[in-house]
Amino acid sequence: MKTIHVSTGSPYDIMIERGILDNCGEIIKKLSNAEKITIVTDTNVAPLYKWRVLNSLSQQGYQTTAHVFQAGEQSKNLNTIADIYDTLADFKMTRKDLIVALGGGVTGDMAGFAAAVYLRGIKYIQIPTTLLSQVDSSVGGKTAVDLPQGKNLCGAFHQPALVVIDPDVLSTLPPHYFSDGMGEVIKYGCIKSASLFDAVQNRDAHEYIEDVIYECVDIKRGVVERDEKEAGERALLNFGHTAGHAIEKLHNFTGISHGEAVGIGMVMISKAGESAGITEPGTAEKITAVLKKYNLKTEDENSLSDIISAMAFDKKSTDAGINFIMLSKIGSSFIKPVATADIKKLFGVEA
Ligand code: NAD
Image (cartoon, rainbow, N blue to C red; front, side, top):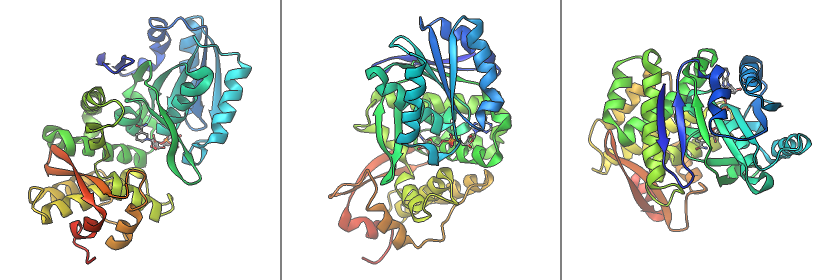
C-alpha cells in the first residue's frame, strides 16, 4: 500500500492500493470511534460498489445506511443536499459519526459539503471512484454544490479525515471519463512535473495507473499544504480552467466534458504564452499531442473572441482583470495577472 500524509490544518492520510475497497472498514476503524456511517453514492456507483463498502463497514460493527442520488452533475445542487440532510437526521447521526463519499467528484463535492455543514461539521471520508476524483477532487478539501447561477458557487473548505483510493474500480469507468481524468493528469505534468508529462506521453497511463495516481496526489498534497485556502500557489491547479470554464459555459455544460474543455484551455493559454514570448516555443504542440493520445479535444468550434468574452464572467475574474496560469515550459508554471484591457491582446485578438 502507498500512503501519503497531508499536513493541512486538519491532517489526513491518502491510501492507495488495489482491492483496498474491501478493507476500508478495518482502516476506518483505526481512526474513528463513530457508531454510525452514512455512505453517499450515486445510482451508477451504488450497484457496482456500495455493498462491498457496506459489508466491510458492517464487519467492523458500524451501523450503516446509504443515501443514493441520481448520478450526474445536474444532481449537484442544494435539493440533493437537503435530501442528504434528511437521511443524516433520520439516521440520528451525531457529531462523532461519519459520512463516506463513494463515487466521483460530484459525490465527493456534495458529501463533503453536507459534512461541512451538518451539526456545524462532521468528519467525512473520500473513496473516489473516477480517475478525476482519485487524482484531484478527493484531495484538498474543496467541497461545493452548483447554483442555477453557476458551478460550485456554494461550498466550504472541509478537509476529509481519510482518502481511500482503489485503482481497481477504474476498470468499470466508461473510457470517456478515464480520458477526462487524464486531462487533469496532463495538467499536473504541465504545471509541476515534466517527468510525469513525458511519462504519460511515452507510455500508456493505463499500464501504470497506480503510479500516475500517486504522483498526481503527491503534487496536489504539496500544493494544498503550502496554500490550503487558495491564497496563492493553489491557483496553479487552475491551469487551463479559465478558458475551459468559458468553453463549458458556451456549450451550456452539455456535449463537452470538463476535462475536454480544460484541455482546450491549456492549449489556448500556451499558444498565447508562446506568442507573447513567455512560454517556451513548441509547448502548445506537445500538450496537443498528449491530449490527442488520450482522446481529448484540443480546439473548440467557438471563436476565440466569444471564448474571451465568456471568460469575463469567470468566478475568479475581478474588475481589474484575470489571473491566468501560464507555463514558462512544461513542468514550470506561474500566475500572471492580466488587466481586462489586455486580455484580447494576450490571445492575439484585435481589441
Ligand atoms: P461524476 O462524479 O459525475 O462521475 C462521472 C460518472 O462516472 C458518473 O456518471 C458516475 O456515476 C460514474 N462513475 C463514477 N465512478 C465509476 C466507476 N468506478 N465505474 C463506473 N462508473 C462510475 O464526475 P467526475 O468527473 O468524477 O467529477 C466531476 C466533478 O468534480 C465536478 O462537479 C467538478 O466540479 C468536481 N471537481 C471538484 C474538485 C475539487 O477540488 N473539489 C476538483 C475537480 C473537479
